[in-house]
Image (tube, rainbow, N blue to C red):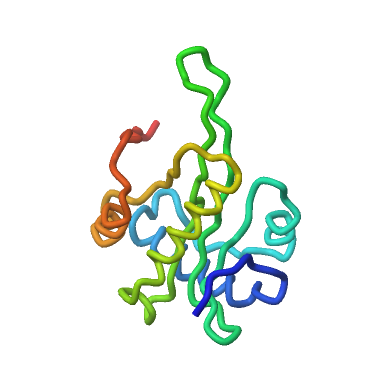
Length: 153
């Protein structure tokens, strides 16, 4: 198994992983999430971007996990330090391959991706109901820095 940058040949594997990820989104927050379809254009926009990539965990040409990483500059606000983050937009390991260290390897690769591009820190979001996900991130040195709250209108 190795981690590499995704390419066009990986799209069908990535679609299956996104389906699994979105199924979790619907389970945890049905008021916000639906099952979508990731078009070729969606993937091409990432593959052609200067500030994002999809890192994949690959076993013999089969993608079993991914991390969609983005390099984001902090907003230019006087009270914020001028920092850069590597943001994990999405991360998933196919359910049958979880708890084997693959997610941790994707996190490490995401951190390295950020370091190579001058990022100061790494950030992501996790559903508060996703206790396993929270434990996973905490085991990988993430900690809660802010709570997002909302109210229906």
